[in-house]
Image (cartoon, rainbow, N blue to C red; front, side, top):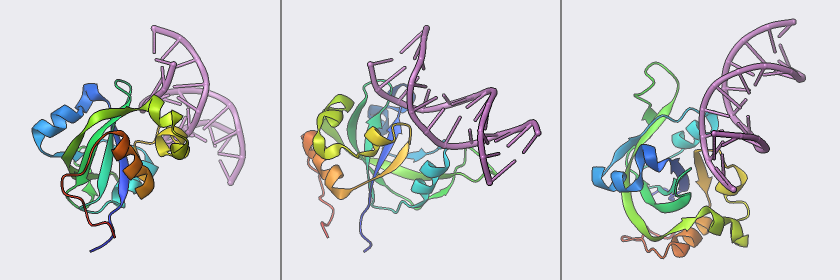
Length: 147
DNA sequence: GCCAACGTTGGC
DNA sequence: GCCAACGTTGGC
């Protein structure tokens, strides 16, 4: 099996909060209108894990999502060259990891939220992913293979 | 192909 | 609600 990759995805809670995501059980991640973010979407594979960040309001990483499908066209922009994937909730953090905390953590100096504040879909290293999971007091229910 | 103008995002 | 940052667009 291909190695799992890690990502960061952002949503404004007033638009689509993690709690709603959990209620829905899965959702299509659509509406990305930035080339770099789109290319990141296209690099996703089923099984990849995403940190779920609440922007604007809350300003914290609040949970983990899993990519369910290979990337496809964005149905909200028919005929245009955008991308989307289906994602499902994995776990909500016990304690949301706030932006202020991320900023204070030296090991996260080059975490994309810090360096690329406006990028809505970004790649995350395994180290960063695991560290943030730990800061959130969270363990993955079904630890994905660690290879 | 450069770069100024514009629009949007998102922290504060 | 303001404004800085920055990606995108469009004129030249």
